[in-house]
Image (cartoon, rainbow, N blue to C red; front, side, top):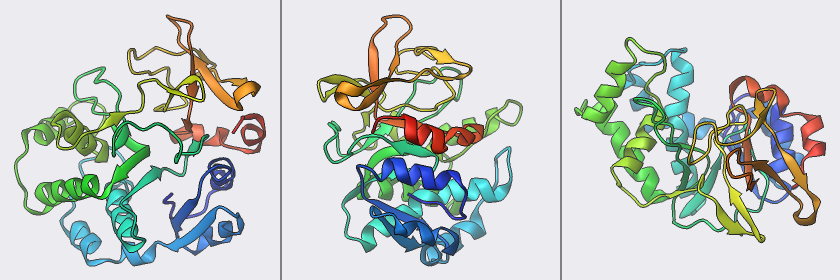
Length: 280
């Protein structure tokens, strides 16, 4: 889990995810106190932020986004820093968990179907490209592919039509080129085998999925696949398996959730109330 500066929602993210999982919290001194949680090991982010690779990328980075440069820069370098962290700790693979994402089950027992497992929504509209690693299993090979693409795009200035078309599209349309575009490029061009965790799979005798965002009805099959309540996922609890589920609007099936992503403004719901209400 990588989070540079402390925010209140972070302690609840750790409380929930750390119930069943070991967390390496990569951040600055403002988050160090969270290592008091028995599942947390604090890792100083400065070693990675000040590395020669990150400095080179910063020097060559071109900001194509619709928000401030610092935000986009940080999004692009997150996986680069996690890659260096994994090598430092001799991890062949790891689960990347954004700080506004909670993981509700033990990732070591979850039935991932490949060495890399990402959340990969369909392209609901032109240039949607929403593949993400906010709650995903990735290995060093995936990170190396990502790093090489970063070098090609920003440092070598290699022309990649997939990327150029995305950038040009957003010159006159909402959205932007960000790290998710690169993950989508990796998946769509099959540069490495990837398991799409939005597809239900058997676990604990139920059908489990990973979800993209707390604020959308998005599923693998449809953009409006799951029931919402007041603009948020309608989450229900099942005490028999100590788990939570959402409901497919068309089939009425229960799909049990392995994570919740409190993206953007939804972070305000990652709080004491939900931490005490959820089963995990």
